[in-house]
Length: 454
Image (cartoon, rainbow, N blue to C red; front, side, top):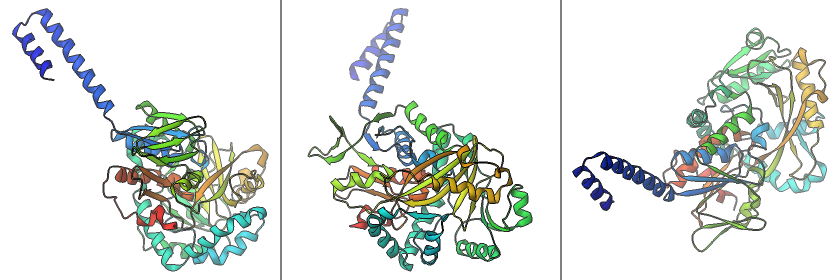
């Protein structure tokens, strides 16, 4: 740098045209060199997983000056990030494991069109997870879980807005609220009970009856009561939305490698070896965000994570302009979302693991539910729609793992968001950023520790 300024000094002494040209050349050279040095000195980090959680983590860290690479065995956004209901469910602050769900479990499982199905041959494998789920339903555990879900969901959209703006994806987000509908003679009683549960939390809601439901959703029938959540957002195309974030990451210098990581090995040089078929990729820091497959990568690091796969289904219909906003149905536990290219029917839970073939009857039955509530679907057949099945990564206490490895400080974890992956992806990215930069997280992450299962 000293030599550079000496040259500048002599050029100013002899201010002729040639000197000015040389001075400009030196300035350009200096700028290029400094930019190159800056890029060479950038801290690098590798995100394993190209779902919405991994993408948000990558985009957030990239915006803070890190060089980020995403690695995935599949194409970006090819899992639940593309097939979800599009609902940013910030009102869902209660863990799935609760005393109320346990009481209604027999009817939920035994009903032929019920929201929960367990493949008989898979039941023995699912039993340990089920036992942990029962334990998580205890009052004290439920209270702790509710507290952390409140924290995560309260700031979920605030965390998203900078990323959405960065990706120019504002047109894919709508804020028209969300309806949770109740049917039958006891609909009002159930609505009041649900309303009361949320009334002590910072969730804006109001009970609406038949005439008000008709104003909000003119084509909806057989719903006498509902709860309206006016602040809720949704995306009109989950695939395009997630891809917009991914493409923003790539446009800003991010790198994507399509390869399967078989094992994570911390090495003696304080780096991490990512073992693939044929070669090893070395990384300075690593974030594990591989959704339903995350527990396979954490085994080698000493963690036996009770992560189960809740297989979720959707049926995408080409019928448009049926609804103005997402509408969910409390008793049937399914949701209909208006999207740019049609209406998405989503929901149901199936325990059948990662390897069994999809049971497309689970997708088809969603149409039966929808036809009960929407007349325009009366003549539609399931074969007219597009079926989809994806793997939700679910932990028995309904809380994600958001943590830094206690031994290998350059390994971080962001997985297990169950039904709230889309909702909590950006706030998870903020928290991972806190951990990567050794900053105090915005709230206590101990309930989301990977150690809690050991």
